[in-house]
Amino acid sequence: MHSKSPVHAPMDQFATRDGELVVGGHKISALAARVGQTPFYAYDRSALRGRVAHLRSALPPQVKLHYAMKANPMPAVVQFMAGLVDGIDVASAGELKVALDAGADPAEISFAGPGKRDPELLQAVASGVLVNVESMRELPVLAAASQALGLPARVAVRVNPDFELKGSGMKMGGGPKQFGVDVEVVPEMLAWIAREGLGFEGFHLFAGSQNLRAESICEAQCKSYELALRLAQQAPAPVQFLNLGGGFGIPYFPGEQRLDLAPIAANLAALVERAAAELPQAHIVIELGRYFVGEAGVYITRIVDRKVSRGHTYLVTDGGLNHHLSASGNFGQVIRKNYPVAIANRADAVPRETVSVVGPLCTPLDLLADRMELPAAQVGDLVAVFQSGAYGASASPQAFLGHPSCLEVLV
Image 1: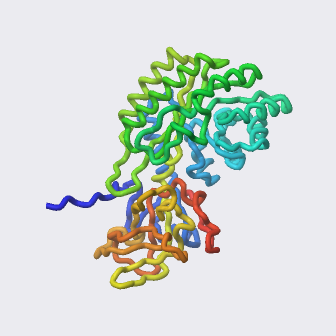
Image 2: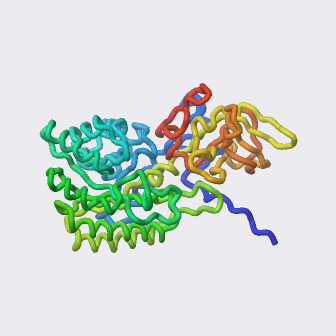
Image 3: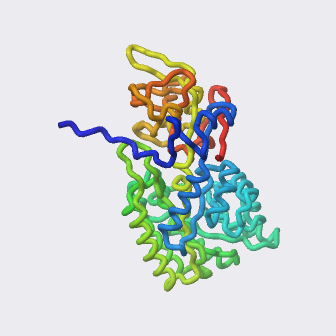
């Protein structure tokens, strides 16, 4: 007996009506007409709201939720998320402007990144946001900005720990890394902060991202807490901000299942209880991007040609890797795997056929679905790529080969 091939996790965040995918209450054909062009990304408000509410109900209420806006910096999304979460994490002065324009509270904005330019650090101090310091070079720049502006420079130390988040898609800590300050250098940095009178507030530890193993996330959170507790003994002020990172993944590929939050919630509850006694002024922060927005977005592209080459059918669409680099497999995948894909206006149709969905670019890398079983589709039909709310439009080379850029809508 042959075992079945693994399948994608059900994409049940979106309903279907009259055989069509429904996003934000709109049938996809009507939404495409409203947008006025393909390709486009659509982000569903109810899915975003539901994901935040789900986390709120699962995790201890003392844990603060921050949105890492690099996952999706569309201004309308950032403004919507700013009204749902406790804070925003930015990675550039450009993102900082979007967050401030969106009405995010500067007291709850943190600024991370390994290459902050001097003008960006000045902007951060002027804006009153918390800077996650990642290099000794940043400290005198922040001190000078604080003196020039007459404003305190709020700082936390981003620590490069001596462990990794096991099973993560991208490892952000452990070993040599461009992110953060090696843990063995942190005492020197804390002494400098104390000597120069910068406003120390805490620590930021981010071991990795895109992890679907709850036990690995729990282990990293425990190790991060223990490390912060040890470093706090040398800190110039009590820890108020303890960012334990994120790492919560979503299922992209066949065989992957949604993350089980229950063990993570229990682990965080234990850490919150410990912190009440050991770090009584500290707020524990979880920083999430992909987990908040990834499943709430779809990429919609229209079929412009149907070609058969030596017995294999290709559906050629008007958008591809230029708009959705990650779905093409060229944004961190070692071995290319298919994102979940549907024929959005024929979601329940039969018969089905095995096809490849390719974009319009002159490169074999422009592949959205490789030999995937989908409802039989024709020119004019709409292809939906699920799990597209994070690292989509802003993470793709939209100028590549001169094709039109895509639109984004929040519905």
